[in-house]
Image (cartoon, rainbow, N blue to C red; front, side):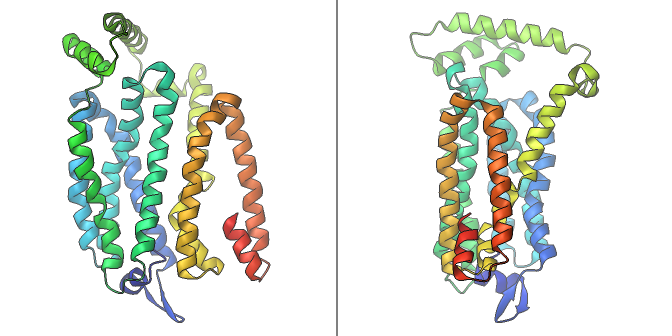
Length: 329
């Protein structure tokens, strides 16, 4: 939205030949949703255990449908920020529910693909969002940014009917001692060749072992010496994903305009930017199986570091070729 002329005019201030959103408000709006997601993700575990994955997910989808109204009708930066924060609270729960649910209903052979598919959905959403914004950027009225906000309602109409066909997690049902419901859920998930009773027995035994292991434990235990190595790795991996610049995606199209591209070219580059990301997620499924997670992670960060240095160096070269080169990198 930062690169949409109508958005800049309605929410920004005059600067040079056009309008601009101040850096402080760009940061506030860009971080409003992630901050809300942090709180939402931390709180998501409780309703997921109390009411189940399916009910919690459906409630969050309905809540998002209501909160989009704030974004759609916002005509000032404070109201838009409030909409971003509140929507982030709910969207953060999806970050938790989706991989948990996917891992609990997928067969073991498909688990890595189904959980990483969640990331593909994020990239798909961003790609479609860039496409819609590119299509509406030339509108001179508020519809240039209101239409992209409104398209979020489309997914509510797709997801809610689809959830009618989705079974509850058999793992959660076992934890609630609803064994008959868990067996029915497994039958819906499995083919006729699968011994459902054997799978159910395995889930029950695994749950019993985990319950025994977790007895008397608390969050403080993850910081004890015996567990610290795993905690450090988990925190490091997730922190690095953010610190390496993933949230610069929010500024992608705007960055291209600052780099020197025309608005139309910047939007086209933004779409290509997300399209490459979409293909890369698919490619990662093969690469993870062939080279492993750690190698892919380390090599990827190294390549990213080199690319970032090249972008910074090319910014010192005031030519059109350098503008396209750094945007492409």
